[in-house]
Length: 219
Image (cartoon, rainbow, N blue to C red; front, side):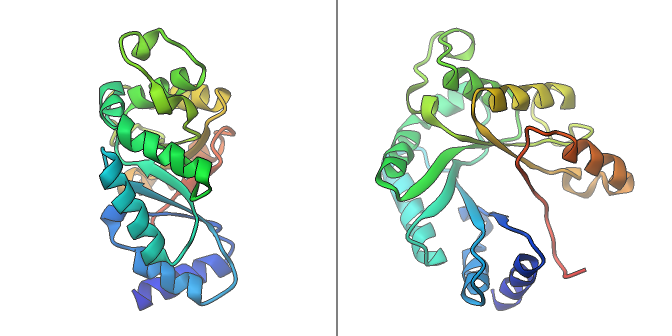
């Protein structure tokens, strides 16, 4: 945690202002160490696999305690695979919406490696009762504000669809008022041989507000 925290602190000093993490990653102590070393407070987004209110409460309490923060900027339901998965996590989503209204978190949403949840979130935000929500109640998902989709040049890692379809779905989410921050710009390292093209593809998407890019060294 100390070594990782020092690396994150270095990143903050270099201008990085957004940190993506998750309960699964076990990096809260690293981030806490970085935050304690300076006055720069980045936006922090974390993720949980919680499906019930009880599990979501445990996850949020753990994040606040381990990060030593009263308020978490963004909490996402981790790796949603479909509209059915989203429906199955509605109780956790409802809890996060309640915590947003209380000021404990600033926004909630989902992360995904699939096109369908991005489109479903866009449809929910637009109040569309056709499409993926024809036979399901979008419930709290109508009020989600953030989506964290897999966006890269080749669509490496997608569970469904193509790179172009994910780009179009993410743009639709943005038009519906949902904030977008991308993941896996370099396809988990598989696109490092196409670094310039992959970076240009990602950075030219003007509807994307931020990217989570992995780093291991100060270099």
